[in-house]
Amino acid sequence: MRMSKYYAPTLKEVPNDAEIKSHELLIRGGFIRKTASGVYTYLPLGNKVLKKIERIVREEMENIESQEILMPIIQPAEIWQESGRWDDYGPEMMKLKDRHNRDFTLGPTHEEMITTIVKNELRSYKQLPISLFQIANKYRDEIRPRFGVLRAREFIMKDAYSFHDSEESLDETYKAFYKAYEKILERLGVDYLVVEADTGAIGGSDSHEFQVKAEYGESTIYYCDCGYSATDEKAVSNVIFEESNETEQEMKKVDTPDVKTIEDVANFLNVDKTKIVKSLLFKGREGWVLALIRGDYELNTSKLKAYFGDQTLSMGEPEEIKNEFGVEIGFIGPVGIKNVKIVADYSIKNMKNFVVGGMEKDKHYVNVNINRDFKIDVYTDIRMVSKGEPCPKCGKPLKEIKGIEVGQVFKLGTKYSEKLHAYYTAEDGKQKPFIMGCYGWGVSRTLGAIVEQLHDDYGIIWPRNIAPFELVIIPVSMKQKELSDKAEELYKLLKGKYDVLYDDRDASPGFKFKDADLIGIPLKIILGKKMKEGKVEVKLRYERNSEEVDITEGFEELL
Ligand code: ATP
Ligand code: MG
Ligand code: MG
Ligand code: MG
Image 1 (cartoon, protein in one colour):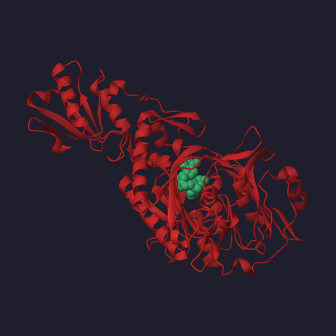
Image 2 (cartoon, protein in one colour):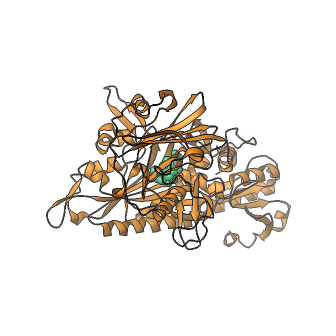
Image 3 (tube, rainbow, N blue to C red):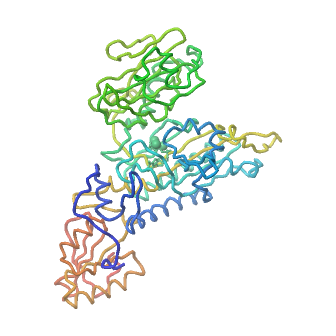
């Protein structure tokens, strides 16, 4: 590719909404452009890197014999209503209607869809296990889209789903995906950590997250030398599980109040409804908990969660309103009244008040200030895990690190197959629901995560196998014919074998070096005064020094 014709609009200025380096560099380097909040275009450079990441992901999926499909992005509401997630998934779901007033969603994920596709057609235990994957756009109306492609509203995910007739078979496939994900990260050349994770809204039992270590990552990870590592949410439930030997069954049962609206909740809690934020309502469990946060905050809302024994209950996305308290954020959800843990992210700034209320049939606790009048008989504990606390496995002090979640694997069990009536004929002739697993990988988030970890003051430092170009040829002047001729010759020689950029622009060498560093091309071949002696300068992106190389004898083995 010739740089003079290449569409890579680089910028000197830092874009004003770029809070972290990867976002800044991907914009400045001409990789991406914002179309709307959380919606991006990938320009040629960005698209090239995406395709290289995709290739690695696809190859590792094929290595474990997962089969590629392509499902529609538009999904009918009915399948989500059947699974119960049309309401439970919350406002992150992008919903739309067609001209006949039928409801659809732009898929945030595809469990319902894949289960519907295989049902009736995947019939026998003899066909199991099987796993299917796709690489496609996903849509999530994130409450705070930010950090460029890291938290977008339209993004590219590789999502895979597996079907089994036994827990052992699921376990085997789960391990295969786990290993494949480690291989992907090794091929990408980034420093990562695999951590235990909770299953959140998706449901199911085991789960692991694959985290790229990064100073400004949104995930907080606790880990220990003994090998224990978990997301903060999971760490809380591990710690809680250790601390209390109670199980869900032992907890006190109370009747669920019949509340459907904010007004019902307000009446039930006996508070003014303006003091309750508009929030998600759930029915059908044993009790309720309400949490409000008031004040200025920088909250990762996905981290506002309630824990119930060893189980995490996803409360859905809280919503915010402005009222006499300033900004208030909150949610209400069903939880067992005893042993409830509310966990909020540390990034709450200047939190003025954290209010937790809960209710039993005949008792109400509202506007409880944790520090002042926290009721230990109702809430055994409200806590967050922090570094230095004892590891739930070995008791040594936990360490803390930040990461970017690029992948997650789940054991789903039969949640979706039961709800959507997806059965197969087992060896004994009986109809049984599929045991399922699902495995997500954020392809476009990976692009941002790599840059967030691999950059310096000058720009991006791509690992060679995913760099948009492996090397760039830079003649220090295009006006000196012997240099531009030689550069042209080299370009023709190398371009069939490598991904080569030829910076043929009539610009100063300093200007060209800056762009090459910003874009992050791993290798520069510089043609300057020593060309007369048959020598070029070869410079690696991550080294400041260059090496002189004689090219009269041939050249390629040096690359
Ligand atoms: P997060 O905790 O960051 O919100 P998630 O746990 O909701 O992510 P999953 O449902 O596990 O995401 O989806 C699988 C993968 O898709 C994630 O591991 C991540 O790499 C990617 N992903 C999820 N949400 C986004 C987003 N808003 N923008 C870009 N990638 C995303
Ligand atoms: Mg999310
Ligand atoms: Mg997550
Ligand atoms: Mg996840």
